Length: 120
Image (cartoon, rainbow, N blue to C red):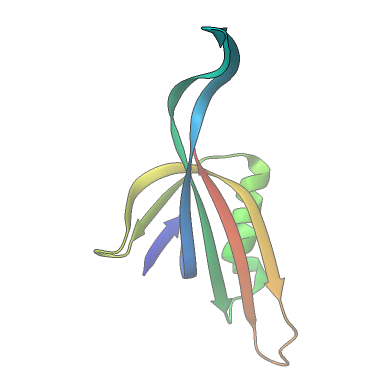
């Protein structure tokens, strides 16, 4: 699995993609009936990636890096290559959400995190 966002490669456990049309919607009265009118300008994709890190200090964490990029509001390049299963060419995205989970596991250093990306 090869997933990269900005300067970080991710260990992805699972991922999903959804799409959201961007446009306007309004109600109108036509032929004595109430109808919904819609004009779509385009489509933006949203990715949710469930990831993990093992034996990575917080200072070098991809989760920390992505959280900082979200706070700065910058665009990053996102790419995925899963062979015949799934591919995304280099696409500009915003990091819109980062959730970090860490469980006390004694001396083990394992961190799980979820990142949500939205196409710029």
